[in-house]
Length: 166
Image 1 (cartoon, one colour):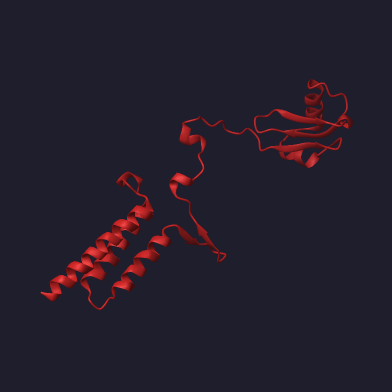
Image 2: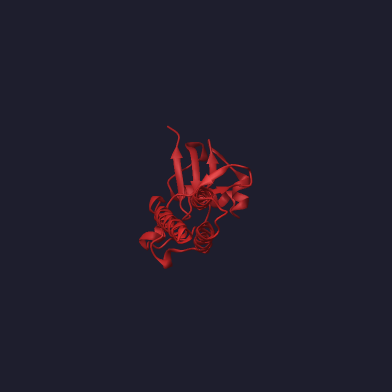
């Protein structure tokens, strides 16, 4: 009789602790599970099951194991030795995909073309553009000389942003 009561008590403790820790993890549906959270669920169930069945495992050891495994679901040890903590899904920043906004692919990486009235030949070469191309683009914007420009940058969409000297 004592064995049945002990097993029942350990089962109740395990069940409610698992219920509590699952709520902390925040997964409400199977569709929200990633492979890692699926494995986490299996590990948590295994730890709780061992705590219930094996009398040589103290309840406090089982509770500690379950709690630590829950923390490990959010904390990752980086290769440099630092500990990173993942945000819960509801606290993560939104992105364009969340609002079904179409993203426009970049034509270019934003690149500086002119700094303090001088063209940057290396950047022009990386873009496969010539200084003649740059001068033509600047003339189309009403710039007569590069000396008028403090800073000019090729934008991601292919347009040129120009800051004139004052």
